[in-house]
Length: 381
Ligand code: AMP
Image (cartoon, rainbow, N blue to C red):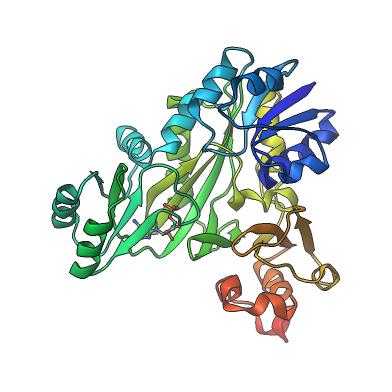
């Protein structure tokens, strides 16, 4: 049984690794000849808009899924006429456009950041008047990892943004002074079964995820429940199939949905070692209509992204409870090259293990301070 995956980056790589024990085969389509999955699976190198290549790619596949949410919806629809495509292309469409996405949150009664569409300097002026400063201006489409967004703090920032406004649909959001950022991963199977992982606490630097703590420290039902309700509403309304990630701001004890991703997610990498069933395996179970696995945590985890450069493997692996994942990509500034997950039996033990990481991780951009959650004195000694 061969599964087709659109996008050949690390998410696809880890999906395939989770699928091999289930006896699955994989075929990837990615425009880049450097896509890391080439090392472990069949890879078709072609543009997503190349219909002849899509046709060839889909031949003999059981189904198609994606690991990259900016796959053109037309490509997903073209494939859906030939093989089942999960998650449904409608989910891809909603997630690709911040305005559509926030519109969906609103429609489903999910609290979200206040926002206004902006497509010219006059509208920006009016939007700033309504929402006030600071505010965040984002391109409605094709933004990720903090790209395509500007924080407007002062009247001068607004003047500058007006004069440099790109000729695309944009969104202005109220700046949220959040206490922390959280995400939830939910999964719905072809037969309607659903399961939800515990909330994860995320720390970003320059718009890129650096550290996830899972389950989120100080996690109580008062915030887990609303996250689950939000996820269930989206899953049901889209008749979703597969893993869905939703990112939230925690603000005055409440969750505000920021965005969603219709795919496995970086803030779910901890589930490989830290949950009974990983997000990757559960995504595959869901799209195949197999029973879902438990989303229960199997310890306390910290996941650290390796961005731009890599530590010495031996130094990482010398730390008990550390697991290293390298994606086989060549180093480049800002590029996600791998991740490390530490899994421990208690938050105190996790803090101890984090403090034992080599010097490479003690740079401020790894956000380790945030992870060293109240370790007990005896364990730290
Ligand atoms: P996004 O691409 O929407 O996930 O934004 C990237 C990061 O920018 C988020 O993880 C936040 O740290 C920050 N950010 C985005 N939107 C807002 C907002 N409305 N208020 C405050 N911070 C934001």
